Image (cartoon, rainbow, N blue to C red; front, side, top):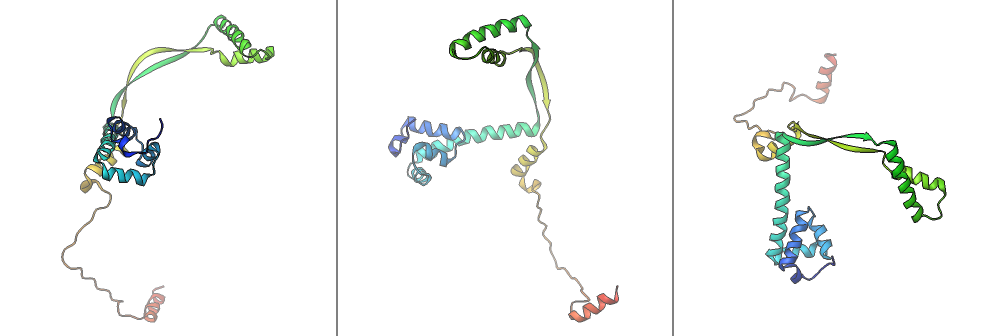
Length: 195
């Protein structure tokens, strides 16, 4: 897409939809400015001048934010996932030989100057010798993720879950320090006597 640097072209329905899409894709304002063909400071000015631009970017980002919130919530709680299981089985030797001969013929046409050994090596590398067989669907329990749960709680309930708790003391604190008025020499003498 060619970059547009005229603000008028970006406040059209198509331009706003493009901006919203870039924001939804997770691009930063700096990356969006680059895509438009302007410097980030110009985009910030456009956002101030044209609320439509600011709203389109917010709308796109809110969709992504909601998806991430939902994924974080799902990981914090744990969930059941459906997984397709496969088994890899070897192909029949005769089938491999037929496929390699076919591959050699096609490769020979594309590389007319290749030696017989180069053609055989290409066929060996180019033809698969196994195939995957679908066994079925299996449900797996994904346990809750402790880190996701802690992150969620610290941000949703910071008063209860933050690491640093502040305790307020009321009243006075009377501490009697018997060494408070002693000189350095007196303190050294006491320390030496207690050894």
